[in-house]
Image (cartoon, rainbow, N blue to C red; front, side):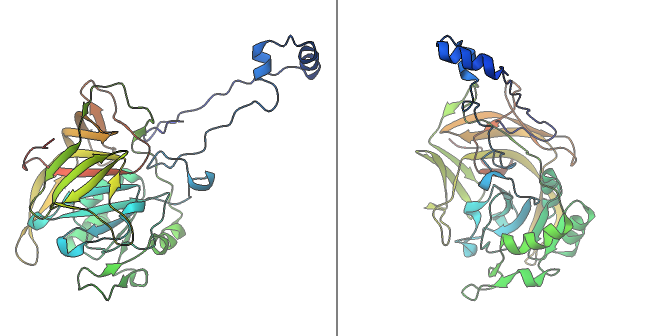
Length: 347
């Protein structure tokens, strides 16, 4: 069964032919049972599709979607932060530009867990608007400037799991230098979130195993030049998009290389907040409300279209050039929030 976006539910209607037991027996003995009756005989009723994870479209583990909210954790991506832990089991990962040409990740979990997520870093004012698309999510991060904490706390739908509020759920990795040494786990953060009885998120994308009937281009590689620190490539290899940066494969600690079933490139504008970090670098803010160009990478092909989002209360819509909704492949998704003022997407 296809998973649809928020507010839409696809109802499977199963029509069952009921035939009197005596009639079935007679027809079966004479060998003259019509084909439609034979298909309705006991033992041939078919099986209902298992429930799907809301943020991947994949069958839920164990046949049931976990009763828990989306959990977002802010993960660093500066060269000193690599290799990271925990990105491989995430449902959705956002890459967003921050100050100084580096990027950070918003790593979102729902169906799967991560025993270790590292290194956890601070939030930005870009984050609340992005997270509100996921209903009432929990948000783990390693503190933030005062004005950023206020931006998170103003949005009452977001459960603030700041390290300073919940120090027992975060730990220090002695093999790494501060501030690249903080880690947590989904289990520890969900333990707090589930006390609040927060709801399971609604789907934000639509999924299809079959490639959609839209114009697409076969591509082997896509290049996104955020900066010298985050020079990103996605390369198609057999059945997945493999990520590399700065000329090397993006590998994780305790796991293999970073890969994705879907890569969404969302071209965004950056706002100058007028704020500066501790070394005096301007802090930008991603403008996730509005519209812009968009690209979907799946199955070794690229679909070009646009994205639209009218307000924080809305979920971002991704549309093809003919106005059809992007259909993602069931699986994990990376969303690249790529600045409009950077070099154009290179194929």
